[in-house]
Image (cartoon, rainbow over the protein chains, first blue to last red):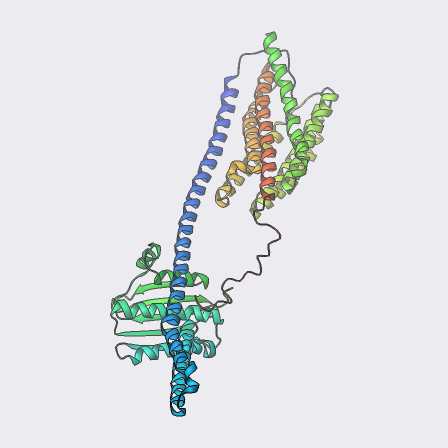
Length: 275
Length: 243
C-alpha cells in the first residue's frame, strides 16, 4: 500500500514512467492470459480423455449386462428344454393310474421315474457346475485349471498343459473365479478361432502380483488389436475379459514372440486387490 | 489546471475508498471465510483499512511510520497467505526464510526512518514487489501443473494473485524510477495517478476474489447424494457367483 497526496505542482507527462509501467502491466497480463488459456486447454483435453474413458466404461458395462442376460437365457433354456420335459415325463410315470396298475408295471414305472429324476438331478448339477465349478470352489484355481486343461486334452484335437510354479497361497475365491473365467474365455477363443496345435498355461508370482501366461501356436491377436476390438460395439468375449480384468485391478498383455511362432497372453493380477 | 487538480483529488479519494471495498466484501461474506489463506487475507484487508483510517484521521502526519509499518505487515501477511496457498514445500521454506530476512532488514531500516518529513523507502518497496511477483509466478506455475478440474477464474486465490501481480508489477517500475525522480516537481501527481489506477484495479480484483470464494464455498455445500442413504454396505460383486 502506498500513500500519497496531491500536490499543487505541475509538470509535463513523464512518458518513460508511463510506458515503463504500461510495459510491466502488459507483461503481467500476458502471463495471466497465458496461464488461463493453457489451463483451459488442459481442462478441455482432460474432459475429452474422461469422455473417452466414460464411453469405454459404458461399452464394458453394456457388454457385461448383455453377457449376464445371455447367461440367464442359457440357464433358462437349459431348465426349460432339458429339466422341464424330464420332470414332466417323470410325472407321467407317476400319474393317478399308477395305483390301479399291476405291481410289476408299478415297479417299472417307479424305476423309470427314478431314472428320469436322476437324469434331471445330473442336468441341474451340470448347470450349477457351469456357474461355479466345484473343483474351483473346493480345491482352488490350480486344480480347476488342471481339470479344464485335462478335458481339453482328452478331446485329442489339442495338446493342452498347465504348470503352476508358485501358488502356495490361494487368492480369494472371487478373484479365482474371475481369473478362471478369463482363462476359460481365452482358451475358448483359442479353440474357436486360432486353429492352434497346443495351449500351455503357466503361473508364477512375486511379492505383489500373480502372473498367468497362455502360450499357443495358432492365429492370435496383439495388444493394439485387443484395444481396438475392445472399443467396437460388437463382440462380448473380449469386453468381458476387459471388465473382469478391471474388477481385479489387473492388466492383460497380448503379444507375439519375436520369432512369430506363438502368441502369448499374460495376466497380471495384484495379490492385495481390494476386490 | 484546476480541472486537473480536481481529477487528481477525485482519483485520490477513489483510491482511498477502494481500499475499504475488499473489507466491505469480507464483512458481507464473513461466514464464508473458512480457509486459512482467506482468513489471513481478511486480516491483511482489515489491517490495510485500519492503517489508512489512521492516516486519514491524522491527516498523514505520521505517514512515514505508517508506511513503514504497512510494508512489513503487508509482506508478512501476504507471505503467510501464499504459504497456505502454495503446495511446494521448497517455496514454502523460501517464503518462511524471506519473512525472517525481510523482518530483520526492516528492523534495521526502521531506525533510519525520518519521523519528521516523508521519506519513501524505495529499496524495501522494490524488494517486496519483486518478491511477490516471483511468488505469484510460482503459484501460477503450480496451478498450471496440478489444477486440471476447476477453471482458474473460479478460484479466489487466482483473483488475489492477479490483483497483487498487477499491483506489484505495476508499482515495481514506478518505485525503481522514483528513486531518482521523486522530488522533481509534479512527479508525485503522475505517480499518484498511476498508483491510484493500479490500486483501484487491485481492490476490484480482490472483491472478485471474495465473491468467488463465496461461490466456491456454496458449491462445496451442495451434496447431490442424500445423507440418509447408506451406500457403504453396497457390495455389488461379493455375493455373486455368476459373472
